[in-house]
Image (cartoon, rainbow, N blue to C red; front, side, top):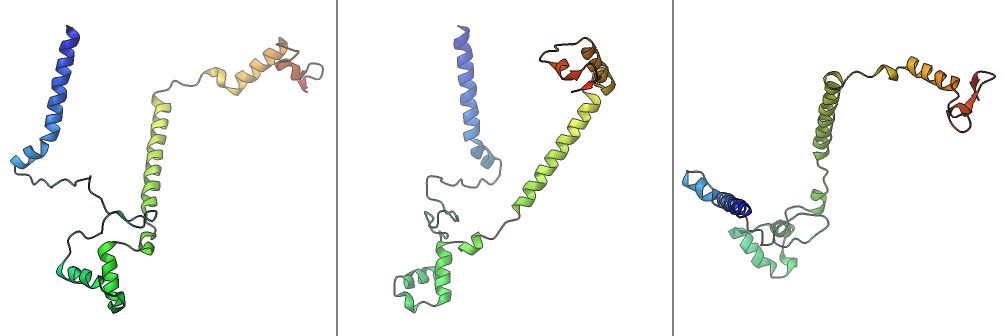
Length: 176
């Protein structure tokens, strides 16, 4: 009985959440905000990419009067077209040329800067934690303590056949 109630409440909350997300544009428009139309992602899109030289659609969707006259001239012999007209026709179909696409961007500087800021903040957090969060290191980590512990183990002859004391020369009092 309780599971049905929880399921119904969850279903109701989910439906209300979906309705709130889908009717957001309607509410925005009703409050005087301008709502831009969303792009229809089922239609082909234009992409300038080196690995796909021919995009699914032309760069310019809406042609001006001069562009339309150029498109009519394009149907005729190309020998009658000037170089400027050929370039204009190219710019109707494509945004950038290959050399323009290959121009290096300076995005790497932003990425490296962001990484350095991230590492710096992380380092500050680690330093803060070592000062205020973690307890002090135990006295058993001190080199003097470890030297005394090693000497004690050698004096007790701990595992003298294959272990730690195997590498100690007891007659000369030094490591083998």
